[in-house]
Image (cartoon, rainbow, N blue to C red; front, side):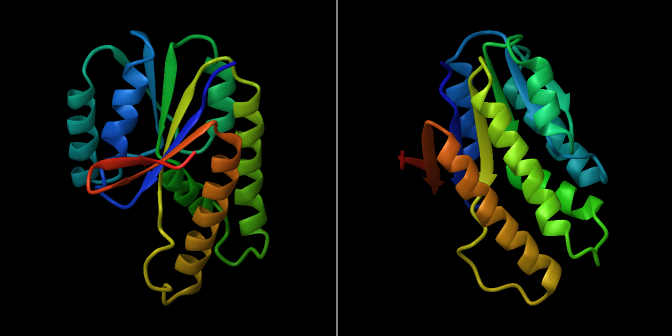
Length: 177
């Protein structure tokens, strides 16, 4: 049975580097499942720097929305899969909903539940990177508050279904579970 690992922390806390190191220890055929979209020059540059840092033993799959389906499709192909990042995926899902749709939260959480179910059925270890966004001030607008709430709920659901959970602070990992 594979061990799934959730790694959380604040922005630039070292969580992606930790996840890359842990994933790389799993073998030589690795998958980086990226949720980022290259929508501007700064993001395109950021994506390219990350690819260069990872090196050639990683295959990158870019998928902003269909994470459970993609994981199910690639299960068993790689030694390990790194999903980076859950909170950007949540943002992509939320922004794909109608802003005024009262079921947006339910729709996004439905995707998270599908991800948890998919993880439970996988034979490949998955390392998930997510941001801890709930330790700051209460956002000043409804969309930002909804996003913060969704991220907190998603992190709780995924932490519950993962075997290991780490938080990184100032580049230092702390094992929670």
